[in-house]
Length: 285
Image 1: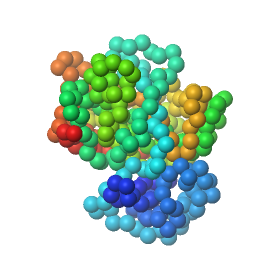
Image 2: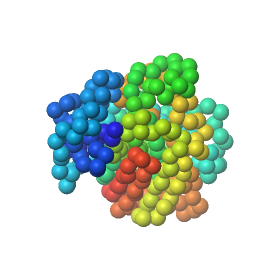
Image 3: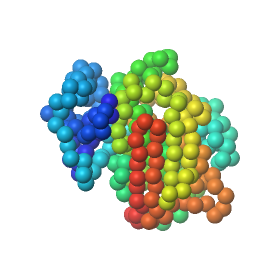
Image 4: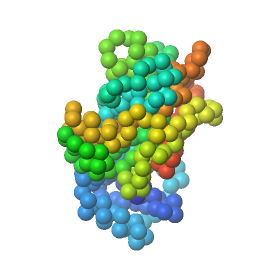
């Protein structure tokens, strides 16, 4: 299934994109696309059955904003330096264990919402990523099979980053990762049954129409199952939590000088195979 949330910020309604590309209203069946729904197999079965039966009312998508596909997100866990190509382009050693950091849930916006370049920013960068959406409470998972059984689905994420704040201003990465609007997510939550191999997905990103990233999840240092299993050893993952799994080569930080960091007025488009496409215009904060 392709689940999504549409409408104004803070007032999104749950919806489903059916096989014919028609947007269907789920409001009569579920309150929201969130952790409570994702953890309820019977509710998901009802949604799937209604979608297959063609009984859900259609929504007019014209001018309708698409919000983040998951509501009431508890936390956004991120994996840094998780592609061989990205580590190489930035001159960093391949990590022996996953690099883990957190983004605040309030950085998450819709896939086509405006991204704000922070005040005093000189190094705002792009990062297309595969996002994991957790569907079952996960703690101390032992095997890759267990880990994948706790995944509800996948989505496109844009891990926008301010590199000067992240690297040159002291402390941890948090300053460069948690600026407002720095995590567009969606358009859809694609359920895990429609993504049989998360290591077989292409990721692409364009800036002002120029292809900048053209990667593949097969280049991940730590694949999806290992990431979920590893993170569950250090923190409890709850239904509706998000894990951003890292970005492939092609970020601005990895380019020769002068590095083409993002500026107000730029347009970024990105996609992951089967998971949809995002488009953001950048403005000043």
